[in-house]
Length: 208
Image (cartoon, rainbow, N blue to C red):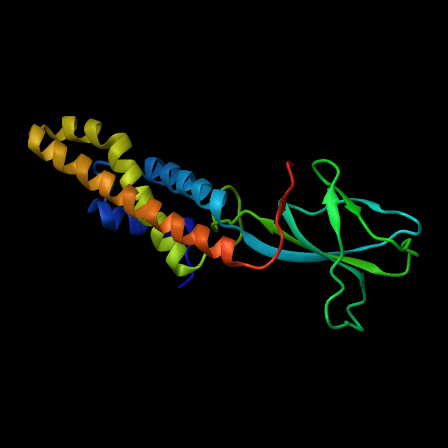
């Protein structure tokens, strides 16, 4: 299933049993979805790769052109996509600053090869902050909807309860429900963190 901001909003409304937004507005729900996506991106990222040309006698390379770069995980050099070698030519490297990679190799680059850069970037949801695609899988999207429902209830539930004039006991039930959904969300985040740790590659954070 392809999830979007609109479909995730519907999922949260279904969990809240408020499809007509009687108690929880669309804006509140979507703010909660955005908050949950930020939490997901703290522990679990997209994996991407790109190539850049090496430069003769140069070991420092700007990565500022890589959109959304969070961290470099691996570098292969010298790399020729038309004639790949095995095993891959993994090399030592480190970050000099936010987006400058230092190629820590013995041989001088000669300007005829590529560097293949493996990196991470944040996940997106189609329709949120102008994103054109959703990069989370179904499990992560379902988890995000659960977390957003819990956050909405805890953040806005008391105001809604005051509006409909229900008892303190019911207010406590709502708070317990919200806390339960957020606890489920946090357990799921630990599962996503495990996925991230289990991937190969030596992630080295870019502070940009």
